[in-house]
Image (cartoon, rainbow, N blue to C red):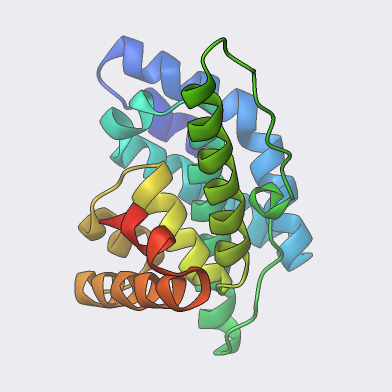
Length: 193
């Protein structure tokens, strides 16, 4: 069924692009969904949901770096599982986090000029503080931030992907910004202006 949907894409270049994405990531998306559901059928459905979203958002998706593409698909996969499971069981179940929550080391290349070193140290310190603040947010809030600031999606598209209203996404962003200001101070809050 999925291949029929892909083959229905009129533009040959787009069809080839989506087919490559499907072939490259289908097993990873399935495995990720399966770790959350332990259900083969749900996991296959999630792969189809993610690819459908990629097709719907193809122009935006093509502009993403490989890292952003993976994050986008994993967030979509998580919320596809969420929607299917919560519909079936009528309960909210927290999902496993993926690699975005791993601690990262920040390294600096030392340039010849002293002011650049100072600025780079401040930027790395700020990124580390921001990463720590974001880890304190719940998973849905982290996903909203990923889609908004890393994937650079408008709130309407985020709302559609996460099955929320546009107002709910905007309100959550306001709350997230306030929470970051409370946790990390004005310096981190100013990054989101």
